[in-house]
Image (tube, rainbow, N blue to C red):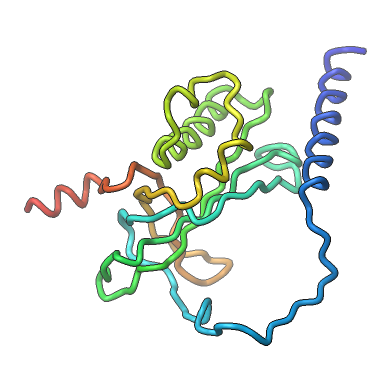
Length: 197
């Protein structure tokens, strides 16, 4: 078997292992839900996009997602999809309520054969997030760092999330892409400079 055949075989084995892990962790669900005991105030607000800037947040959720189609990365490429929730103490910005707002970011895990510079950037973004969320350098510098063992420990950890604001032509609405994360209490350079003037 040539190099290509071995690579395909290794990739198929990896997909099979991922599929087994996913099916082992799935909960049986028959689709029946009792919605009679509920609080309809949750999720009913139209939050919309907030002004760009730095927000004090906590990691609200972190789950695995996988690419469905070949694109920039092959189908089946894993990513850690993180939901950040803005602190309830965060004040309004330019008249916009920001407390409890959510931002989302997926940190992709590049395949071993991914273009080197792009893979380093993807791993760097994930590392910056993990550091900001409180994972120690000792763990991150271990060649056997296991994100499955660590991801649930990230929930609730405080950090600063820097977001932009851009218009999505397809959805015809403003969105807040996550531009970066920093340890809790940090602010962006632009905000620090603005507060001095």
